[in-house]
Image 1 (cartoon, rainbow, N blue to C red):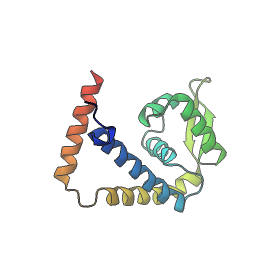
Image 2: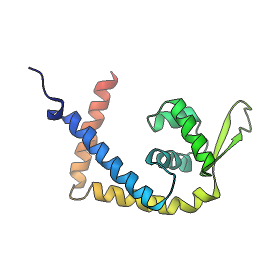
Image 3: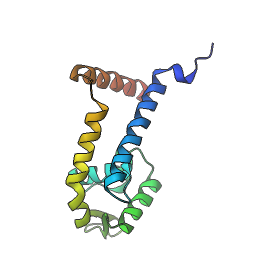
Image 4: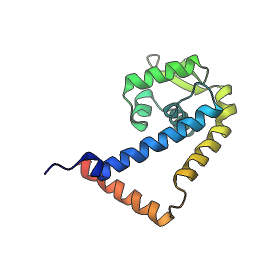
Length: 144
């Protein structure tokens, strides 16, 4: 017997992710123009690891290299990032945050904290730990 997709845990996981992304994007768009949730993720990784290459960023934000290249080009155009020739390898670019981005980072962090708090409201730390353990097991099972 065929199980309906909507009756699986994977459907619920996907639905939860889509709802969270919708909430997060709306809250970002309400406060900052021309910035997507995926672009905010990219910025967060660059803040912590400014030396990341485009391919490393792509892997971290679950995008292909071409998508990240387009995303970065748009962020350069909108003055969220600047691209410079890499100091050690002229074939590569280094990506840097602009002063505009540095100014809005505290606001973006506040939005992210608020989004996460809303999404996790009424969920205990024990429940969060259990979800993390279960999802890590699913990831391991699918990586074999």
